[in-house]
Length: 185
Figure 1 (cartoon, rainbow, N blue to C red):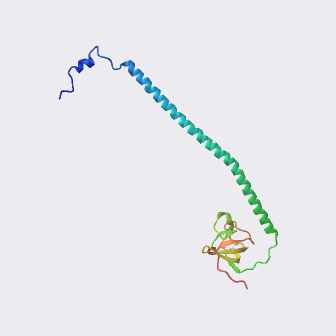
Figure 2: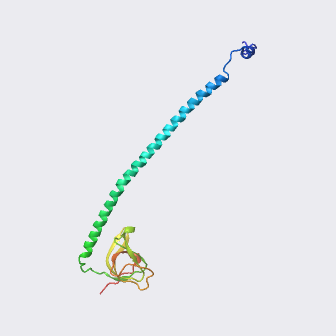
Figure 3: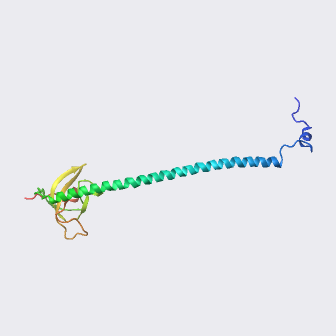
């Protein structure tokens, strides 16, 4: 097998009269072509980024406009519900309360919240009851395994460390806050 290297290759490729394979002008043309290609790619990336930014701005504007219409509607609904509740409360307060059966009397043993309903929720809190407050038991109820009593505060404890509900206030209290029922004769 003949050798693949021809000793005359050196002279043929690198002689002073050998054909040129490029040179400074070819390098310049190659750099210009690379620059144009990179410029086109960069421009494409900028267009994509700008369109995404415009889409994000459009989404934000849409969400803001929706909020501008939804929030006032929700506020109006909440105000209507509140005014309805206030009217119902005023109607209930205007009606004379009939005699309520009293199960017995007792006192508050541990301070806590007096509630509109027998459940633990911030919106049900009427006010505070304090240890030593005298009460009347009006109605028992078991809710989710916990015992509650509807009570009426008859006399506030004289040594309350803070403000509490007024005498005559009715609401629900957990049985864990109250003494046992002493039946009234």
